[in-house]
Length: 126
Image 1: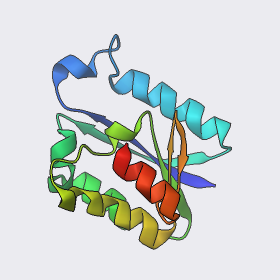
Image 2 (image 1 turned 60 degrees about the horizontal axis):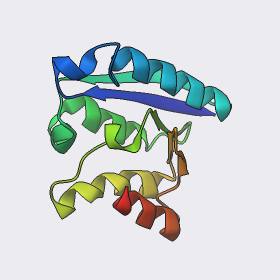
Image 3 (image 1 turned 45 degrees about the vertical axis):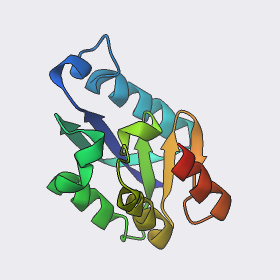
Image 4 (image 1 turned 180 degrees about the vertical axis):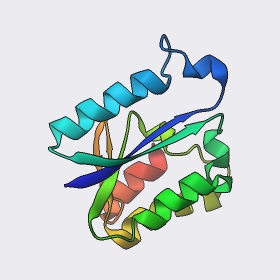
């Protein structure tokens, strides 16, 4: 199973190894992928990008577009909040890209399949 790993930090302070920075997130993504027997085929690193502003970043939009590729089965992230932080209801449209493609979200908390009604609700709550 092929997945894309997403790493995101908002500020330099978050990027440090002693925080949930990029090195820590990279290790977590590798552990999560391994636990699900997934192969990370692409790494997307968003450094200095707020979770509320991910849709403005072309790298994030490209990640969502890649979900249309049937060989990509999901996105792995250290935590759900690395994916996005909603500030408007329209931000939840990010989950539509997953539901439309059938891609899943893999985090340390488990697997979320936004195509399934219960998982879609959990995504809204998370």
